[in-house]
Image (cartoon, rainbow, N blue to C red; front, top):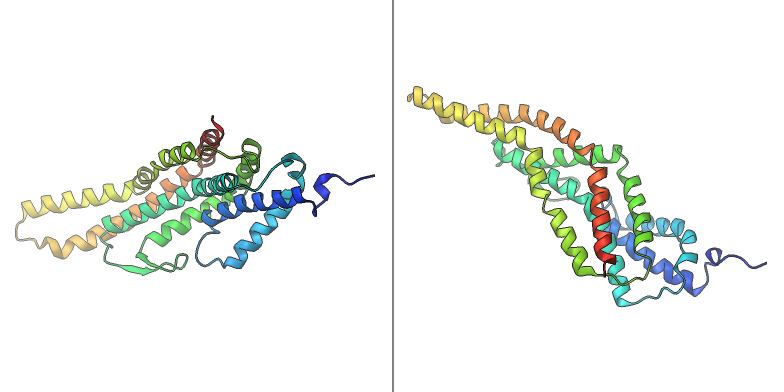
Length: 261
């Protein structure tokens, strides 16, 4: 009685599948939230990629017979992985854009600190907003949804299949164009409060010219901005709770573009 092909880990077909699957998973982990940050060691990312490849390989070896390692096929695997991870990373980048906007409109644009996740200097509210968004997404099973999307991609784009990368990249860019719009929506309460505080100070200065607007503008703007930041975090959490539907739609559109003739 012969063993099934999925159990023969020493066969050439299984090795080819492992290389192709590992390329797709490694590319996804390269840009995926919570894994691609600088504080996560490379050894941890490599170990996670090897672990996921080993767990998913037995169910794919029999379905990927005839797959070969070619340059177009490897490019497709890397592109699909990057698009899977980048689709979720768009939400984190939108939160960073919101954090920058909140810092600027709260009068804290001159304050900077070291971002513990990226290892770079950034505006003071940006790390707070990023960590809040990442924590919320992880609590909403970000990892499970991304793994499900990875499995869906393996069914839509089999291993080693040369895809149409131009169409997929165009679809990804069009879908990612909402990034800055999302960031402004997240920061809308802070922007509105800053505008209201500025208009109020302008009216006070007009009514009382002897009033030193510069002496009171900063504490009022900062206080109103910090209060509005709390409201912005609540609004952002409500919007991020519904992230799974748009993410699945994005992945579906990209995979359709990859396999479209």
